[in-house]
Image (cartoon, rainbow, N blue to C red):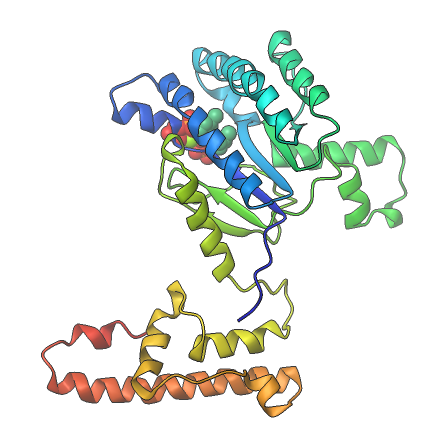
Amino acid sequence: MTPRTPPRHIACIMDGNGRWAQHRGLERTHGHMAARASFEAILDSALEEKVEWLTLFAFSTENWSRPEEEVSFLVRFLAQHVIGREAQRMHKRGVRLRLLGGEDPRLPAEAVNRLREAEELTRDNTTLQLSLAFNYGGRQDLCEAARSLAAREVPAEQITTEVLARHMQLPELPDVDLLLRTGGEYRLSNFLLWHSAYAELVFLDVLWPDFRASHFRHAMELFHQRRRRFGNLGATDAADAYDRVGGAETADTVGATEAVAVGGRISPPGPTALLGLPTAIASQLGTTLRDGLRETARFALHQLTAESTKPERASRLP
Ligand code: IPE
Ligand code: IPE
Ligand code: MG
């Protein structure tokens, strides 16, 4: 099996507070209040998992379009009750708070001060970098970078992806490895557009106030089942082909694993080590082997199910 590389940067779109409250006949603001436990759950889980960076989407540049009452509640509540009250606890645990988002005259000075104080208090901590996307928009972040380049008159030929990244709001922010969204929506909503270019996307049906450590663990499991290739055809493909034939049983290979079980499992080592072949050939061989086994199993199962009274077993094949 491919060794588990922990995600360095997890980003989360914390969505579903309003619906959580509405389902209970409550005001939407109650959903935001109920989300404190979820904030603690994701922070504790990220610390436990030794994640280096955690970015939480707390308030988007588009959220200003919500009713004034909700906006004003959200901004104050986040700054004073979530970050303000959590600051000491975060500090004790080595969490460094980083603010990610534009300044805006609509943000109450008191709330901004609270956030800046927490940033200052935690500035020397190194265990976990918590970036709070507050009044944040991915397009605005890119636009600011372009402005900064123009303001410094950086020549066009010197503008590379690395240079542009250095002009973004938080230049140290690494690429996102795992992007998680709760609330059942399948979109980015203008979050970390640049940094999520190669993020693994995980969408969970749970509403954010119900999010707990078990949901985090589930997301991590899904992350570890993914094969990250970054546009490449790496050695992982050979391991991948091996895993799919006789190794790990993942959500998208349950059918294949089940099919192989009909003819007995293949034992390690994988095709590359076994045959001493170059990776690309071994990878191709692995894929051909898998497809061949799948076909054989499909045929065998077809024969079996033709006589059996359980036709649904065949339909579970990929
Ligand atoms: C996420 O929950 C919190 C913020 C956007 C600040 P929502 O308030 O969007 O809740 P739903 O999606 O309407 O349920
Ligand atoms: C995204 O959620 C913003 C935050 C979680 C802060 P929204 O609820 O604002 O996103 P849309 O409007 O459903 O896309
Ligand atoms: Mg929402």
